Length: 530
Image (cartoon, rainbow, N blue to C red; front, side):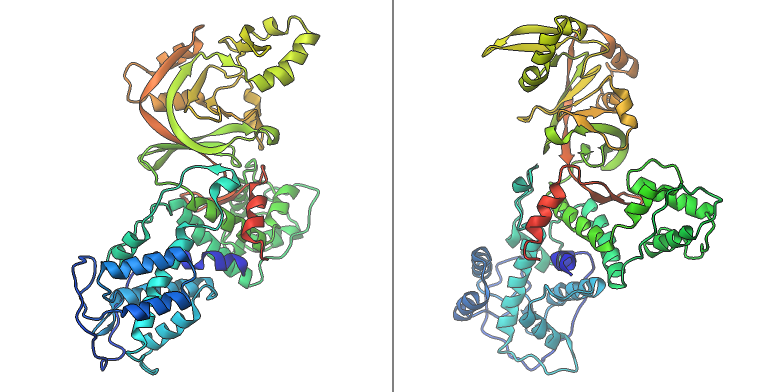
């Protein structure tokens, strides 16, 4: 399965290490090697430089990996890393066992190198023929080469984030340092693969197992909404569908809309971003009918995106565009969330990161030139009172185009407060007088900026350590007729992201619509050979 092959190898750090006994106690060591590298386990086994060159020429196709392998062994005076005089080391055994366990978990072995798999099977099979000491050097090199290839798959995807309109800088890694850390008994630095990644990865493994069993049957559409207490043959099929994914107790069967099904339906509606009515309607059935293979592909695409996230800081803000929500994290825990309005398809909100530095109470709205040209000038020609009626004023001209701003007030398009993280995209968070939009399920209505459902709550949180700003004073500043700028003592990282699949801390798998078509664009790159 194409999705499995993309991610099976990137899980090998998730389980522990184990030891191994010598598979071939009769092998003699090669001459002594320097042990100046403190990360290296002592051994007198060394790699012959001719063997190293021949291996790189025949089996290493990535020039970067070739360079890393040469530098790695030169830095340790060509001392073995995965073998000592007793045979395969604990770290060598651990490295391979991790992959075997995860391959068995996901039911896929397509990513393993055939020659290395054969060597490792011989080494770890006490009943098989022992691996000749003449084959140890090549197996040693294959393990090192394989480790670097796994890191490439783990951190360096074949898709450049910026090509997918993702402008959040990635954290750089040091493959050599990660290998040294692993060999020294430590764990490589995996913070770029964060908690969001591992949650989604576990769910994807579950869905892959479901797919191998045939997926789930299609549920017939219904014109009427089904509510608790009602009876319908469709309810039996819905229960079975939810039981397959573990979202309903297997003991709950039959056509009755039970209380436990009601609870499960609310959970499913939350997972799809629907209104949590607790009733079954045709829209919910259509979402439940999406094939498991399509859900796996969506998770796979979003796994790639989680690999693009940088290292987390204790406090940060995340606005997820397809979810239409802003999440506030404090001390690496979710403090609260709120609904947001994002850019419409014609004025997409950009995926990027920056630091929130300023809060502006009672702000002016400096109207972008494109809105002045395309929307306001035609309106001004039709209605001479347009500017006055909308509390707008002209402050100058730029190349013949009027520079227009809207004065502070209850009808200001930015509402009573805005939050600035200066960036070249001119995107920021702000209040809005159009409160009714937050009641809609799909909230893509803005010109690119992010409108907040509860801006007061965010302002209170951002200024929580500033004694001069109580909630009452914040409300007063939002009601004054003059603009007031406040600089935060500690800027807060802001990430505007695009995830159509993720898992919350309580284990709920979420899916959302691909409102900007970014999933489709990634799929064309990821699965071009399919």
